[in-house]
Amino acid sequence: MAEPFTAPIDNFFNPRGVAVVGASATPGSPNNQIVQFAKQMSLNGKVFPVNPRSDEIVGLKCYPDLMSIPEPVDLVVIAVGAQHSLGVARQIARRRGEKGDAGAVAVVTAGFKEMATAEGEQLQSELIATIKASGARIIGPNCQGVADTYNGVNTTFSVPPNTPKGGVSVISQSAAFATSFLRWARDQKLVGVNKFVSLGNMADLDFRDLLAYMSDDEKTKVIAMYMEGIVDARGLIDISAKVTKRKPIVVIKGGKTSLGTNVAQSHTASIAGNNDIYDGAFRQAGVIRAQSVAEFYHTARVFDKMPLPKGNRIAILTVVGGPSTICVDELVSTGEVSLAHFSDELKKEAAKYLVASANIGSPDGYIDMTASVNPKMHTDVLRLLMNDDGIDGIIFMTTPPGFIKDDELAAAIAEGYNSVPDEKKKPLLSVMLAGNAVARCRTLLEEQGLPTFEFPDDAARVMVNMVRYSAYRRRNACQ
Image 1 (cartoon, rainbow, N blue to C red):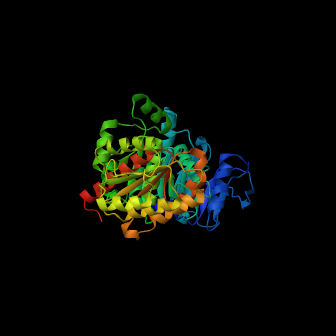
Image 2: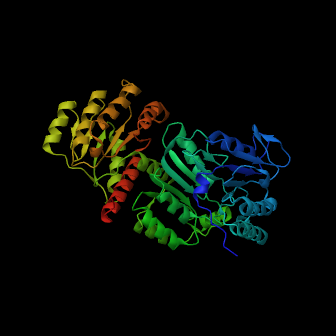
Image 3: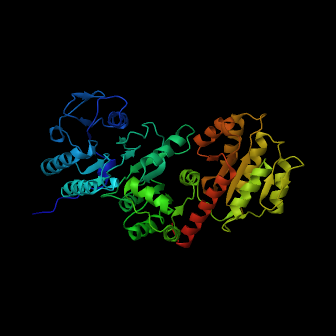
């Protein structure tokens, strides 16, 4: 007997049709939200709710079972109770045999191996074995599946259909963690997303498979991962080392402590592994490991928005002394970054634009414009720093003065940054210290692709990560 044809992973992100088995007609329920989001994001309208007790759900014809859907269905969402999931798995196997589709299966249902019971483990084994025997691939169980902003796919109940498009692809063992990232960033246009994958228990597809797929995905510029553990850690590092030659991977890993490991095991049945070994292996493979949630969020999105620095010489431009001290401490403490050297010519030129009390070059690489600034000064000095080939990146810090309007300041910064051709561009990270009072200015900059931060140490850590990844690429002669 011939082996069943193994479906490609692309079925998850480019399906001809999506079936939601266990769809609900009850507004406000997760299984109703899945259908609503799938419908709202679909580009071809081929979303098929399945529920034998309903005729229509969110305006879509509802089918009693998978076999009765007359059109091609490449992606099946299992959202029934765990005790009914095996029945759906058998329908998938039958559909694969008779119609040749249903190659991608997202099992949203929970109640399997993560329960740490013999029954849960047995049920998961039977479910996965039944589906895999048909050649279909599985994400989950205990997950939210996938979303693709460009191809119009969404099997989740938490990724908003109006999520901005961009170059960040997210792979996460925690749907809540990943979707909180997207919701945090949405209003201020902080991040643009390409693909989203919630892996859950990883009973079939895991990080290795998705990394390999996204390595070849042209719209993915950076891969952001939240992970708790993986069985084949060696395989993960091997594939990561190949992917990082092409695009950055940013990871935050849970389970650093024994108690954290216990939480991870109850969440996704994962074994977190030795934290120090992961630390060293990630570094060797060129994976950027974030130590905090803020560092993870910001590093991933800045890799998408900014070019890499060509070296480690960073200039500080500021109007705020105290936060600048914190920023410089954080920046140079790793030993991987140094402040840029300002030539006499640059210092003389900067002095022409600023007030006499401005501090230019003490210490070297540092300019404090003082509070006596206007928008044109920002543009002129940024233009000067952007044009200097002895500077590889700039961190700008301000509490925007009340006498400069948000629009004027944002326009001045953007004009300074865009004063050089693309090939001379370097990362510019702008720290706006005043919380909600500067929200509009930050949004105006983010809309133009210029990343902003609330705190100086966050910006410094991101700049270090960019310098570190750039150095890794140079060491490995990456194109």
